[in-house]
Length: 194
Image (cartoon, rainbow, N blue to C red; front, side, top):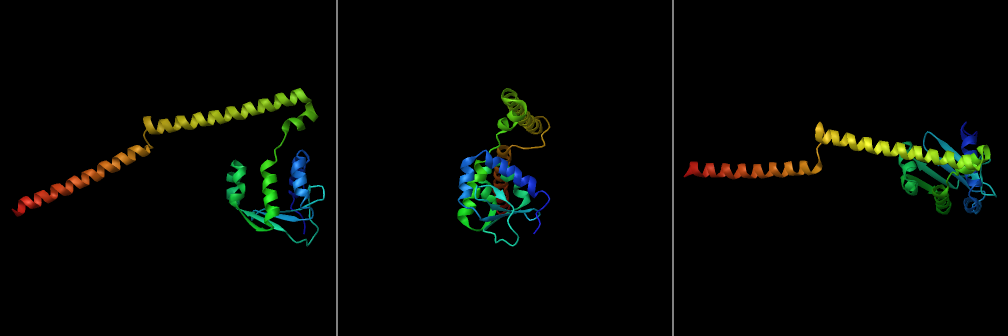
């Protein structure tokens, strides 16, 4: 069994995050020797937990203890809400091991300041991360304002969209008009027959 080309960088990245979180290493170390398979149909990764709680390539023909299957189309939902990530997957095998993987995946966070401080120093790392956070917040605020402005434009100035209340009011008016027409038709028929 040969590992995919992207196996080593992904493993190194996850192990780097685990090295920053001793609690996660301890949780995984309790499952040392177990093998997990992450199966995204087009992408399939298999890792074995080492004695020290890091991930490594399993020996060939090693039995898998848990398989976690997901659809690639669900990746944006998983990335958006890591707390609900495991609601988008199907788990086969060791439920306790899968639960540990879920807890670790929810709790792992990249400490960018720590990594940058090794390259540029502590003060510069803090400022770079703060600037990055401000940039992301600015982009999110701009996106929100743009969405609100487009919605207002399409609702008010160039009505291509309709508010739900307007649709409900229109439906009620049509129903009332239909009922009134039926009553009028019955009265006309009654007058004709008399």
